[in-house]
Length: 305
Image 1 (cartoon, helix red, strand yellow):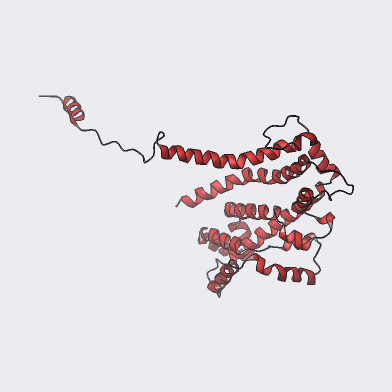
Image 2: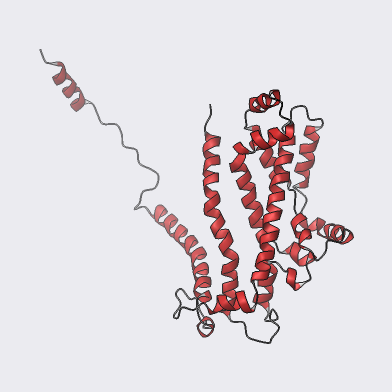
């Protein structure tokens, strides 16, 4: 009699191989090649302008006025950065933007998270009506309330102050609902246990919900910081004093005219591009720091106990 090993080997040899399954697109097919070309063209459309800005900013005044796209400076120079930072005093609007962005983002995140915590309370009266009202504010275009907000700031005496920029957009329906949805994922038993131990609602909010909601807080903080750093229309409406200009207003004056200095002098493209690079640096530094919180948030949302 044949051994069991021989029978198994014969069965393996006689068993037909399963049909091979191919993906819709392979490397050599035209569809995949066109997709790759499209992606490379998309990447180039974003990288080349940024590389041109960097190259011009590190060029001399004479090299920066040469027409065309520059991908590498012929002569490296920090002339543009020295001019825009020291002689044109870009550090002043830079610090104004830092103050507005940091304080505005902090209060925005605090109020949004606090409102989100209130909306998850089970015994909150009129909760559905409040959520509907918050949703309604999200469909109102910001342009329609621009003049009423200007009148309110004028009546409060906040025009031409950084305070007007800090309180502008201090609350957002999107951020409130985002934090509410994130808080709903926190086990309600944690709050009940803290309440049994004698903690009040504000202590539960600080010690229970906020520590486990870092990804959600980081998300709205990043969105709000970027929005405030690039804030233009509110600054253009409320600020008239050049000493209170934010970075975006200073860049506007720097790019469209040479009136940003007290003397009639030529502002080269290297100076303009240096100002743009300085405005981009904080945003470029923030994204890698906040990326881990996004990844953590995705991981927490994909796991279940």
